[in-house]
Image 1 (tube, rainbow, N blue to C red):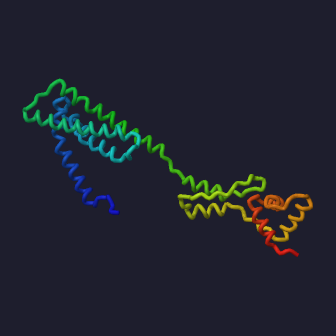
Image 2 (image 1 turned 135 degrees about the vertical axis):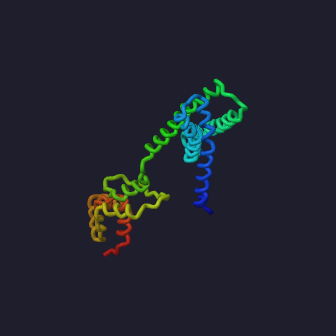
Image 3 (image 1 turned 180 degrees about the horizontal axis):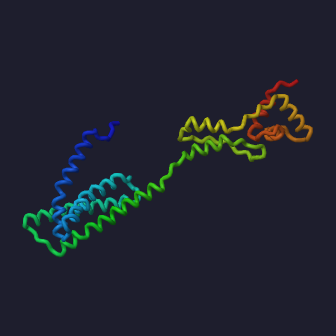
Length: 239
């Protein structure tokens, strides 16, 4: 399947277009700030509060996954930022062309821009910081359960569980398997036929039935080994 990643020169061209567009929008936004009563130095920050802020809001939306918490408000904020910047450009050029005069409503609208931008940017940054704090590196849960299982040796007094076959959807890393095997205690050698015969004779002498669980108990092994011991005893030559 072809990759959706753009070639390197597309990013260069996109960055160039973005810079030129910001440069072209800056004078109109600066003039709006001047009309609203800000001085030359402070008014220079209006392009940052409008065009640059819009680019940041769109970038924030694009970095959120679909359905992720906070993405809805980010989309609303990005749309409002784009609308505000577009309206500001149109009004600024109307005033520059002499088609419109400043008014109390225009001054109030322009004056509220920094407060709106501060609130929305703070919301986006705090939201992103909280999500990063919540995300913790999680060791594969299935891997940890597997390690715990292979390092646990069943005891004879443990209740017998029916063997179950579960399809594992993960692949345990080789290094973790090696560590798990290293932690396991050395395996005990299996009983010989003579040992099983002696255990069977002991059971008969005690009046107990010679079956898998009793054989395993007599040998000091887990009950799940009993069926194998019984099969070995039945297959052993008599004499």
